[in-house]
Image (cartoon, rainbow, N blue to C red; front, side, top):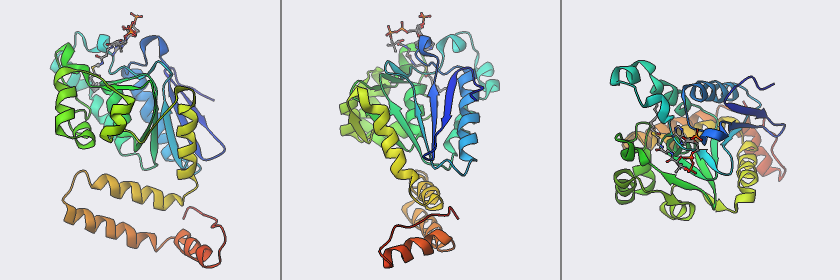
Length: 259
Ligand code: CO8
C-alpha cells in the first residue's frame, strides 16, 4: 500500500519498482516532502532483492519543474544549509539498483538534475530539459553544472546554465543526455520495456557494472580501470557467472539466482 503523500510507488511482478512524482498541480515541484519520500522509496526498492530496476516518472505535462521555489523564496543561506537537502540527493545517487527516468514535459532545475542522477533517460518527444535557476537569481545546486556538462559538453551546458533556456527532447538526444526519444503516448511503456531488459540481467553484474560506469565520472582512467578490474574479478565469485557461461556452452537460457 502506498503510504506517501507526494509520490506513488508500485512494485511490479516483473522486477521493476516504479516511482511516480505526484504533485501535478505544482508541476511536481520538489519540495522537502517529496524529497524525503523519494529517498525512502528509492532506498526501499534498492534494499528489496526482487527489484532489479527502478523507473521514476511524473506525468505528461511535467516530470518535475524543479525545487519548490515557494519553499526557498525566504530562505537564508543558513536555512538552506540546515535543511541539508543535498544529503538526500546524495542518498539517491548512491542507489545501487539501475534507475531509469521516464520524462515527459518539463524537467527543469532540480527536475532536470533528478533525471541526470538516474542511469538512463527515456524521453517523450514533448520533454524539455533546462536549468533555469539563473532566472531566479541562483544557479544549479544538485549537479546541473557537473552532470549536465559531462553529459552534453561545455558549450551546451554553459548556454543552458547561463541563459536558462530549455532544450527539446531531440536536442537532448543529439547531445547525449537521453537514451531515446519516443512519442508521448508510449514514453512510460518504452521506459518499462528498457527496464525489463535490465531486470532480466544477473543483478549482481548489473549493480557492479553500474557502479563501475559511474566511477568513470570521478576518477582518472587508470584508477577507473583498476576499479573496473576488481569488480570484474569479483563477479567470478558469483554463482550467476558460472551459470551464465555454462548456459552459453550448453546453448540454453541462463537461470539467475542473484548471487
Ligand atoms: N516551484 C514551486 N511551484 C512551481 C514550480 C516550482 N519550481 N514550478 C511550477 N510551479 C507551480 C506554479 O506556481 C503554479 O502553481 P499555481 O497554480 O498555484 O499558481 C503551477 O505549478 C503551474 O505552473 P504554471 O502556471 O507556471 O505553469 P506554466 O505551464 O504556465 O509554466 C513553467 C510552466 C515554465 C515550468 C513554469 O511553471 C516555471 O517556470 N516554473 C519554474 C521553473 C524553475 O525555475 N525551476 C527551477 C527551480 S530552482 C531549482 O530547481 C534549484 C535546484 C537545486 C537543488 C535542490 C536543492 C533544494
